[in-house]
Structure formats: C-alpha cells, structure tokens
Length: 200
Length: 192
Image 1 (tube, one colour):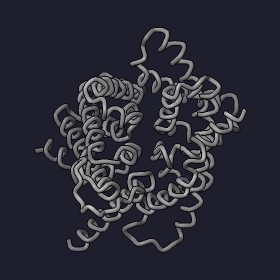
Image 2 (cartoon, rainbow over the protein chains, first blue to last red; image 1 turned 90 degrees about the vertical axis):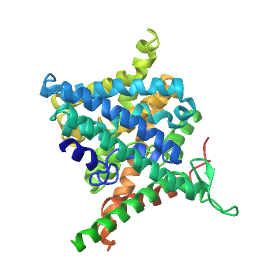
Image 3 (cartoon, chains in turn red, orange; image 1 turned 180 degrees about the vertical axis):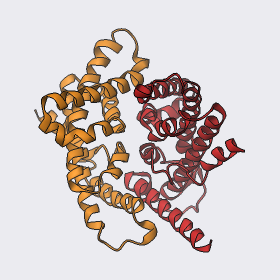
C-alpha cells in the first residue's frame, strides 16, 4: 500500500515539473513535438529509477558529507549509459535531443529525489517513487509537446490532425511559445486546485 | 578581432543561453525576485562559466582525447565543475574575502545550473579553439546575466501589479519570460 502511494503521488499531487517546478530546462527545450517529449521523459525515467535503486541500496554506505558528489557520480554513470544506447539504437532522436541528454545529469528532479527520498527509504518505495515521478514527468512532457506541436505545426506525433487551411502558429515551437505554454498550463492547474479547495 | 566580436554578439544576444537555448532555467526563475541578488548571481555565473569552460576544454583536449576516453565526457565534466566550484569557494574565502562576500552564497547554487555544463559541452561540440572557447563562454554568461537582470527588473515592477490570483508566482514569471524571449527573437538572423 505504501509503495502504491509513493507511485501515484508523482502522477498528480506532486507531478513534476508542474507541481514541483524543477527540471525546467529539458521541459522547455525538447517539447517542440510530442514524440521528443516522450523520448526525453522515458530517458529521464530510466535514469531516475536506476539511480534511485542504486542510491537506496548504498544509502548506509555513502558517508553523509560527500553524499551529493556520490549521487552525482551515480546519476552521471546512468546518463552515459542512456547516451550511448540512444546513439546506437535511436540515432534520429539522439540528434534532436542533442545537448539535453548529457544535461539529464543536472536535472534537479533526479538529484532532488535521490536526496529527498532514495537516500532515506528502502528499495521498494524508492523504485515506486522513481517510477511515479518519472512517469509523471514523461506525461507532462508529452502533453506539453502535444499542445505545442498541434498549435505550432498542426500535427500530433507527426500526423496532421487539423483542417487543411490551418495556418500553424510557428512561434509555439520556438522559445517564447515554450514559456507561454508552460505558464498557461501552470495557471490552469492552479485554477483547478483552487476550485477543488473551495468546494471541499 | 571582428571574428571575436561576431562570436560575442552571437553568443550573448542572438543565441542567448537562457532565452533561446533554454539553459539555466531553475536559477532564472528562482533568483529573479530582487535586483541585488540577481546582480550577485550574474557576476558569479560569468566567473564560473568562463573558468569552468577553460578547464573542461583542457580536460577534453589534454586527457580525454589523448587516451581515447571521450565517452566519459559527461562524468568527467560534471566532476570537474563540482570540484572547481568548491575550490573557487575555498580560495575566495581565504584570499579575496571581499569578492567572497559578494558571490559567496551563490557559488554552491551554481553547480546545479545546467548552463555551466551546457556551455562547456557546446564549446567542445562546436570545435572551438581555446581562445574561442574563452570568448564564447564569457559572452554566453554575459548574455545570461543580461537576461537575468532584465527579467528581475520586470518582475520587481510586476510584484506590485494586480495579477489574477491563479497566475501569481511562477505562471506570471513564465509569461514574462515569454515576452522577453519574443524580444530576443528580434536578434535572430543578425549573425549566423
């Protein structure tokens, strides 16, 4: 039951990056299309789950004073694994995500979960936490990517879904669109939460 | 000389790190509330990015390339940056206390600023020479500072404005950043 709660909290209550405003750089940078958001989300999920597992297993071995450095080395190792795997098997996606694959290392969500959760909890809850947070992150990125792709390009996962004469707002796939989209989504989520609070 | 000038304009304005390349968003949203902290953070960022890019360039070309260890780039760079920041902090505390008091609290925060690692990796990817790397890193970080200080100026004004309740805080900051990014888009095409 405990592990299930740890899993589901990442999907709505503490969904990154909407509720926990962390890891904004990949969120804004790679969500020009739904597919890119999905790829980035899955890569981050892999690193998050693996580093949570290893850090949870090593939590009594790592000395407190150098724990951040140790966490970073663990995370960086898994990032290199992801980087090399994507280069070998998913080359087009690797080209698109580019710089932001090595930058998974400094994604605050991963270090944040290592510090706040995995270093204090047993293996099973840590896996659940990593999976939940990772899936939440993947969902958010895919959603944001889908919104920007539909408005900015008129397509979803590369398939045209709007009417023929639709004129795409190309600004949405550029930097200003990223900021605007995330800002409006955060505002809408706050609005929904406030209405829920008023009712109860 | 004109090459360096073009590189400066390109890195600082046309391809601004934070508003066009999307690097270093967390501190951009986090410390853009007050002007004095924003100025301190900008100075610390210029200092650390320039130094870190120089050191990581040396690591890449004198160690990783020589021994065929390019695949260790990510691990090596992040460790070098984290260690460097610690060393700089200790050095400043002992030797230049005045500078330490100005930058002190911002230095530990910078390790998590992905602009540092991002600029270091970008200068390797673009195959810059050592001097070009220095110019690129310096101008990128100046661009970061300019964007951060501009953003803070707007947010300080916005703090007293009547913003709708569900947009207060981060959503309003993001929409402000959207306007700034639109303005910076005007530089596009000035330099290749």
